[in-house]
Length: 360
Image 1 (cartoon, rainbow, N blue to C red):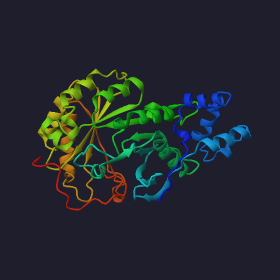
Image 2: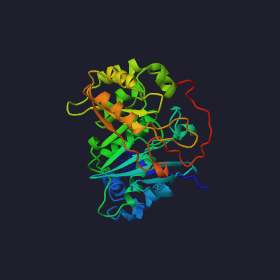
Image 3: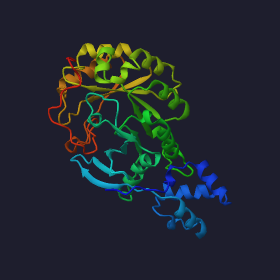
Image 4: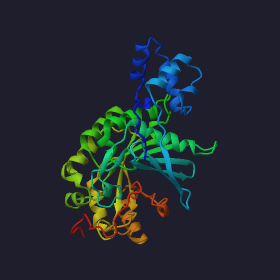
């Protein structure tokens, strides 16, 4: 069991809030920058480490605030070098993050919710339902704790908000975390070009995200007709394809950047050449790239991964229409760390009925 933390977590305060607290104590506002550098750049886990602050201020911070540090409940490494962390939160819930080494990149896939409430048919996290939104500090702590586990010559180069949960359904805390991630002065100093946020397609929040940040946008599409997409992703009933694609066409994406569309290939469901042609027509004229993701089944899943020849045929059909298409190679699937497999170590019942009635 985890004891509830009664003092506010100082990592949840933005610069302005921290400055306001300092000025209320008649402390210089520049101390906020010093504190945040200790938290996010030097990785301080106690106020006593903040040696360039006056002792009186350190004592006051200790009295008023806590500094969060989630427990690493498990750390599992796959054959391909992928590492999955199970982090324990202060209220006994747990979340998963995945560290993915790729040539010159070291990407960290992080969670924004404990569980998820959107019910995507092929995703293990959906089986949990939504437990709660994460606070900004809990989003950031996944980066800080993963970074602590690295050797001195390694560093996280990319961050992907594609773990447990829907980032845009937790928009205020996700945005707060993104601002600290990208703050080169006192935050984590990660370039927005190296951060990708994946969404099931919450149209109003997509527009806000593009207005308020410069991070990369990935849309979880997975079908090219409303009928099938509504069965796979129930959110499509609220934001159908026409509205979602029109939103994407209207976004002021910089010329050298593109929207990524993610398409999970489900054997016998959405992987036919005609499905590929429908997808090509749907995205016609959009500056985009397409990531194909052969499904990563989890225990109790009703879906199967298509044969490699079927995946390649789908890719070739899209390439012939002029699209840049990448096939995402499963990473860490032997430790259930691949896309769609994160479930916070919750038991997923084998033989659970499919959410996709008559989709074939």
